[in-house]
Image (cartoon, rainbow over all chains, first blue to last red; front, side, top):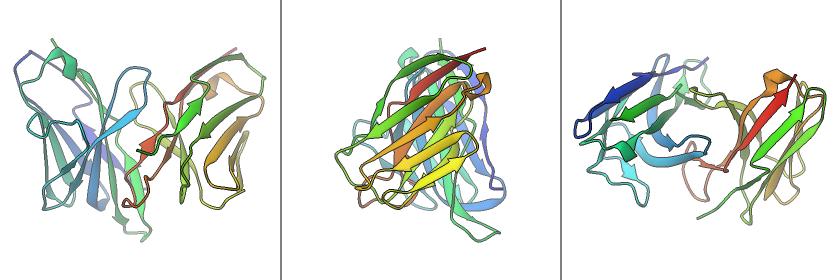
Length: 118
Length: 113
């Protein structure tokens, strides 16, 4: 089946640094990827929609200069948390929409990336 | 904003008991999905319901979509410790593209042996 890989699965960084999280579709071309944020024991909140080759669409209240999204290819989208602060600590999850070789539309979630900012 | 109200938020039961989780909205959805998520993992799709009144079964899990396509329920029969996790309902906000989902608040289920 369709697989989405996120890397790193967890990262610890110092306040003020930037962190990049990758989301890759391994066996299909993802025309659209979605980035979510999840706090402990809470639900997923959509941050932005990323379309290959175009600018990401951010949800209301999400700072686009803070959370930089790049979707340069049909298999890779990246989320960069710039000048990270402790309040940015969270679980970031991507999902990818595309058509694998089997031909049906798929929506697959990555395993998530745990960011801890000290 | 189309909200999905999920209840209860927390559920702690003994192995063998039955339970139901509800997902309600004032909006009509073209489809609704249920996911299960374990700590440190991404959500895993359990089922998609599309037709009003539809009932789908997945082993001990029964999913129902309301006749008006505004609500849904997840019923687990004879719960087992392996059912422990965060259960999420999700639906595409009206007029948006396939794949963009609004999630309910989630139900944290703990099944004690």
